[in-house]
Length: 456
Image 1: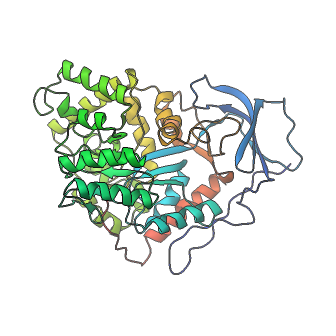
Image 2: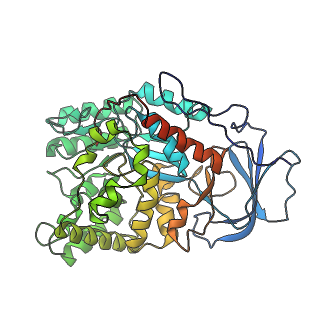
Image 3: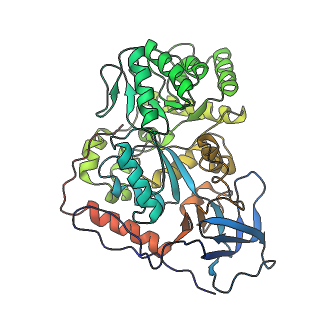
């Protein structure tokens, strides 16, 4: 039997940053077999953890799971010793902004942190560019996660973010939906300035074209109206605190809150809170500016994404943040679908890294560690309609897996203690993951000056 092979990281190319895998050691072909021996399995289906399990992966699929000792691995299998370790599904960050130049600095950070899938909600990359990037990731030419992408934001006549699509009226909105559908975008994202008429026309056309729409609650729309119109997810708890309060979010109103949450459940309106982006509410400014992870984010990216504007919130802001935590805890108890997202690459939100911080904040909101894990695994897959192939550790599922050195059900922060990542059947041991981080650090600290376009 073979020992665990390392995925070698090749040097950077001269013209563009691109972490590549050694074709000799990293690819999972259809005949290769990897066996995780004696692991404790947390499959995220909701059943209790299962100690002393053997998990068999052939190619890029999980083929067998059985009690340790009941299976005899093939003679040529690669063996991963899992004694004392915990195997979970690959994680999803369900709200990012990474598909903008220089995206190749961001994507390896996801894999290095066990984030094997992302939902990107604003990109200026063309459909062909997104397709080509997906193909390069699938072939192993680029290190990065699975990509779900909305394309450009759909905003009102005066868009806030560069690269957005400006919409003035209902006719414009319908045409934009047809265009994004024709481009094979995965969903439509709506934003703050979308006019009321345009919003409802967009919702109607999205239903007709069978393309989901997600995003903020525009200023002209209430969260209740968004749910009733079929908006599949509301990001950042947009305008929900105000809609469930007596006056402008200041004092909770039980009648309003109960009615709104009941509507969300009935309409299957998912929530992606992105607590971690409210960094000033739970970290001090010195903690932010001295964060060791800054070495992975270039000065150009920090400037273009307004990292210099980050500051510690006021007392009122921190009170609001705690109210949102309480509200999300209640949403979970009442069965409303929750998704883990970060809003990377916003100020002090680090691709890959910050998803673990979001999981900790969801536990702080009142979710159990397992429920928090599920927001980034089975919930994400279910929301995206990928639950037949991803989201849990079960036979027949794609082999996106994370091996941990600590039990995340005892302490959710143990999701950071990554021993190994498997993405689409390819293995990245700890040395390979560290090499990815080293390559990103070297790239962002190098002489090249970044000039990325702004991203929300």
